[in-house]
Length: 389
Image 1 (cartoon, rainbow, N blue to C red):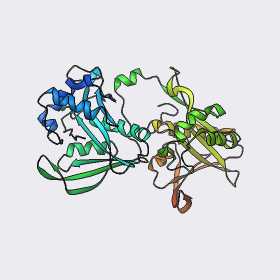
Image 2: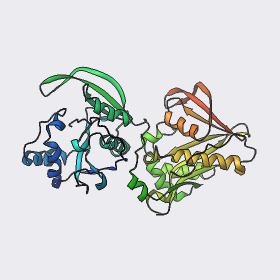
Image 3: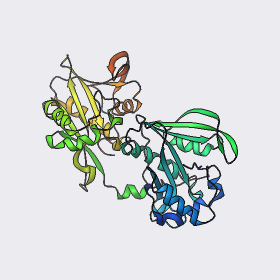
Image 4: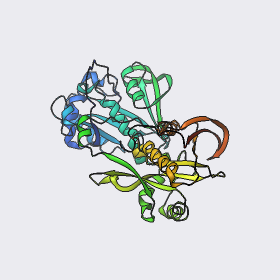
């Protein structure tokens, strides 16, 4: 896939851009021509600028439409500088298969009119938020960027990709052997927040995180995240392959558990994820000492980076130390030393990091170090957005 750049521009005061992704169709050819014919856009891409729509239409028909994951980048009308705005592509992003099914290569291109506005970064963030759940077996998205293309490198870094190496004399680009920087985003990396536009904030109904007891009828909603390898990566369990064992777990473990709650989202609209269906779970497991319990939580990947887990943990701590668990004085959380996102969740909720327990438990074939966090009855709950995001 073509790789493009998003050069910096002086952008003093600009609002967040609202970016969406969708599949291409043949009617997009004229909108594509605007940027596919631009020599500056094509400068760091493998293709030459298109001079007419006929070859671009053939590329759209024969390559883009059959591609397993190729999306149009669109911006809301209020942010489309050329006045088009109604879902017209201002760029493209793709995730192409490689020789190994566990990894794929990211490519993106954005029209010059939208360079320096955060469009490419927002699009890449949306890609990694979606693609691990949509491409079976995918564990790694990698991106190869010309060593001279500093703007495109910034796009990836802002989207949460990790710079791994410079690959010397790696490819021929427009007749010249070039060094490439390789970046990666793996399924367990924390998603970067996608800033909503002011218009989106105005349109969106406030969402409130609530906790309730599970029911057997929650099994299908649970399956949406319990079957996700990225969600299960730091959990003790393996991804569920079917609902039968998950239903048995729900019936035999969750329902009899002394404190195991569904994390739900409530909204005035009452639709989608805000209809009371679980988007995660939080529990407090008894320990050998009645004065302390161990916190556990899991949240669907679609809600990572949105404050849902932090809000759920705050609610859980307020409930269990507020009288729902008799004699409880301490809530502790053991977090894998490599799980930075989960560490941030408990820290934002007001937990104190006490230390690292070396080689503390066996996890999926490896002995792991754990970070110990605690919240005791005399601690103050961290303030913030509490149960709202």
